[in-house]
Length: 270
Image 1 (cartoon, rainbow, N blue to C red):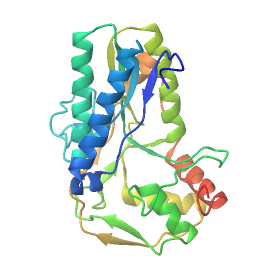
Image 2 (cartoon, one colour; image 1 turned 135 degrees about the vertical axis):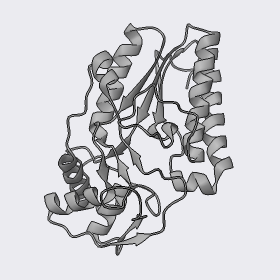
Image 3 (cartoon, rainbow, N blue to C red; image 1 turned 90 degrees about the vertical axis):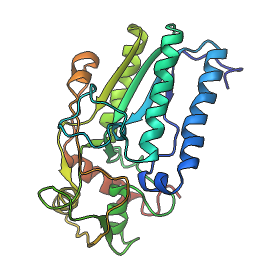
């Protein structure tokens, strides 16, 4: 591809991303995520494409004691190999910039993207059993699965289930557009949280989905998954101040759009 075309910037989305699977298959995650990134950086450098926007993750923060999480939080304590692979890649990119400051790098630390495009033409279509909450919920709602497994109901939260910062996937996409404009205008290495700044429990999401869509979601509690943290939500002030970006969609919007996509695509993209 680089031999045939000239690129100004690379947005690096590629990578395996399931926390539970990463605990079971750590070598797979380090090989795919870290080695794959090294190969990409080599070919970019060889072809003088030195602008990159990297899809990092809130998992790099591990289990911080303070909420909301700012970009200044230490990232040396990820609780799973997926998060650790992101920490390693961020370290590689920091070292690359120190060695050659012709590189311009933006690290975007996603919180939990859910939802779908409002047209219902683009949505989340996982292979096999979903690893993430929302596609599992929509597949239960459409009748493809009998019930939702909720992993853990004994966390130190209001209802015993994990709390996360859920962000609409369209808001996330807009964040990348803002980052692309920024990287072309401002040199250096920058880090931004992309989240809403609000934490919702798993049961909050299930109950919101039921309320806004008029669909019942049967669920059962299962043991905790290794690698999951109790609470995780963002301080996205820096992205607002420097990128002019902030999340616009509510949890209601995320649940409505995810269900509209699933209703219109009961078998996914097949």
